[in-house]
Amino acid sequence: MTTQNLPFYDRVDVALHDTSLQTALSRATYRFVNSRIGALGALAEPDDLRDQARAIRAHALAHLDALLVQLAENVEARGGHVCWAQDGAAARRYIADLAKSRAVRFIVKSKSMASEEIHLNEALEEAGLEVVETDLGEYIIQLAGEPPSHIVAPSIHKTREQVSTLFHEHLGMPQTDDIPTMTQTARQTLRQRFLNADMGISGVNFGVADSGAIVIVENEGNVRLATSVPRIHVAVMGIERIVSTFEDLGVMLQVLARSATGQKLSVYTSLISGPARPGEDDGPEEFHLILLDNGRSQILGGQYAEALMCIRCGACLNACPVYQAIGGHAYGGVYSGPIGAVLTPLLQPDLPEQHMLPHASSLCGACQEVCPVRIAIPDLLLRLRADGVKDGKAAVIEKIAIGGYRAAMNNPAFYEAGGKLAALGTQLLARNGWMHKLPPPLHLWTRSRDFPPFAAQSFTEWWQEREQTSN
Image (cartoon, rainbow, N blue to C red; front, side):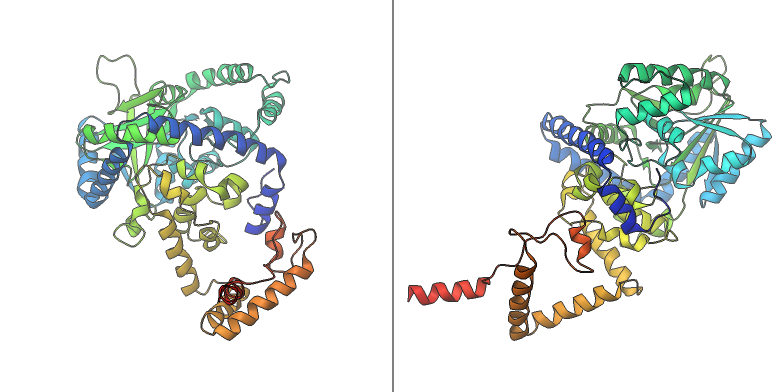
């Protein structure tokens, strides 16, 4: 079931009442959070490593123009082709035209959030091409007709029982929830797809400017097949995903794997520097690197530039209590969780209700605490909330509530009277010490949890009583 066309609050409500989703999220995020803690804890100076990673990302963004030119020149010097794509339409057009000119019929893809961002699969299918995702999680959600719900684990919202049903319906697998059996079924199906493909499309974790190499990390091996077996390899890279040197890359790989999955290093780290050379048996005949802007250059240098430091590890999603409760699809955009609540309004400003995403946060700071490059996500969310108010997107009831709060904070008598009324009203509504159903708009809270009544005695009253007693 997809909820993408529902209003934001309805998507949230569906997620909160989806017991299968709650089970899947609880299993996966608990495992990711604890694995990350263990992996970072094994380092001698994890905080120093994170500080170094942040400095590397800051340097890359500060010198992005020069580094991108250096990367492009080195790619071309090694026989590759570079496309500077101003937006998603330009990237889609380049890839579709390339496929047409090379008589491509069948495409295999490895996981790529950048390609999801520009809705590449839909465009290629409209052009008459067959596209198959080869990352197991992406393959699962492709069969289900759903978008990814996590940056690292796209099918995190699926239980093994749901995956079993999908494979039974689409691949003819006998009904079983045995994970090795399911992965073997997917492997057998996908292996022939690699052999038949004319083009492979991948994302890019990092581009290394001084060598012209792109770096892709994975745990399944499908990336190596998708990038080396087809005769054409196309890599889609957000322009911010760059480092200066291999020394910088070494630091970033250490924090990426530990923050994403709790591993010291991903099972496969592929460094690709162009097409196959003369005499090499493996590798594509052609290599094309798409340098995707799609709004990033407009963010650079502004108050939200820090968001471009993100290395897409997903740690902030795993740690976020909101994401843990509603999953990725409730956010409505390609990127979910705390960083998604920042990136989506910036990169997809035309998405309906995108201004509401920065409010999908408790501002507890867990996201910043686990971010390997220490992005101040709560600060960015607050700035986006302020922008929404300036743009006139605040709800009427919100304006009234904030106006009342301001008036109460400026008038002690008003504040005291309001507190007494709130205490009396909530005490009347409470049953067995809890309120189970509040009137609108506060009913949004009690849709999913109970609310305690205000204390019958305020702190001020308690303090005055204490003072009188002590005197």
